[in-house]
Image 1 (cartoon, rainbow, N blue to C red):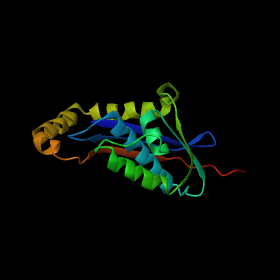
Image 2 (image 1 turned 30 degrees about the vertical axis):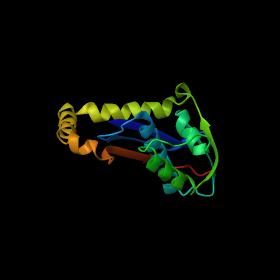
Image 3 (image 1 turned 180 degrees about the vertical axis):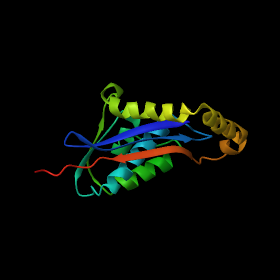
Image 4 (image 1 turned 45 degrees about the horizontal axis):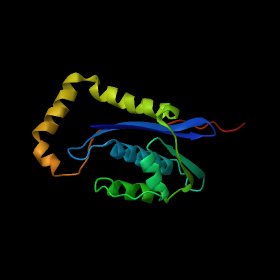
Length: 163
């Protein structure tokens, strides 16, 4: 199971945030979760119709930022389709920079990731049922790279008009 969180800020104010949880029978890694957060955040930018605005993308996974900058190769078979999707979404925006930031400086997004994990585990019976279903279909899931979306939440904050 992988959980993720993301935040979109404009002029210091949060305009959108989200978190989610995904189960995957194979290749469930932290880099996959980082790409899922990036894809969700870029998709939310599209929802906000920010295509012409300059965007800085911050992330605490150095390898993901370097791959998106084009300075690191994408070799993992599980990452290649996620990278392609992120590049496709990023091309719809005026990305001015990709910035790596240490996790200790990315606490807001990290707390959303932890919130997703708490929410998934909140209902202990439901959590056990999901995990049991994953175990029962484990052999089939090991052969697939499909995601089982457990939770996805996006919140768009109203932007106050300047007066």
